[in-house]
Image (cartoon, rainbow, N blue to C red):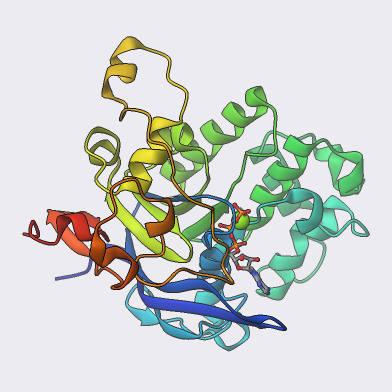
Length: 322
Ligand SMILES: Nc1ncnc2c1ncn2[C@@H]1O[C@H](COP(=O)(O)OP(=O)(O)OP(=O)(O)O)[C@@H](O)[C@H]1O
Ligand SMILES: [Mg+2]
């Protein structure tokens, strides 16, 4: 039977050696993304979301673990990936101000991947014009430089560049967090339309839980390089299990009384926020956890499946796994 997963990430680790030690930016995470799905990755700053995206797109080879794209091993860096497949995974980077080369025109930026992948050899003006129209930018922008565009427009260019090579899978790293609310909605709607039109699967990275709720069908929450909880989006919001998830959900603003009633009661973190260089022993969340047990600073919990598709890494649920 063919797999329903376009992407499988298996026990993925990415460590960085720095002068003060080793940063375990991504530390043994596993998840799958189904065909046509938007899979959400959330977590605080420094939890390893972008690094996960960078390894999946092939910017870095993993320290260990596997990335399977349509069942094919893509665990090597991008330069060693099979030529016909590497264009299939694209990424829209977190900060369009730095991800677009300021010395190149919009035309040069969008046509570069077309040339690299041999899709277009000569003048690609026609194709670039089509892509600009697709993201609702004026064709005249071709001759402009990124600094002459607004933040939202730059992000549209980044999306056009990602779409240029007909990918199947796009990593969207905080695609709208730096932008005004009105432009955010426009870009999100556009991305959702492209997903249907071009059969795209998304890995959607954000720290914005309300946005995640609107776009993702399943969500994984990262904490210091590990996945703390992974669940279908509805389940994640109605029945959060991990104390960290409850803490984050209790702090998001809500609009309706119904949402207020659903929200976990305010959870106050009890300790310091540790960094990736000083990851606490046992469960890395234990210094901040209001529900910690004696075991929590000694033993790192395993991932447990509490109900079908709902996983949590927390000692509170050790006796509850299915
Ligand atoms: N190239 C690198 N060299 C060394 N450390 C790195 C590198 N890239 C990321 N890190 C570190 O890895 C950890 C995870 O970083 P990452 O950028 O993946 O977090 P993030 O969840 O995307 O955060 P944010 O929400 O701020 O974008 C951080 O401690 C970061 O400093
Ligand atoms: Mg990031």
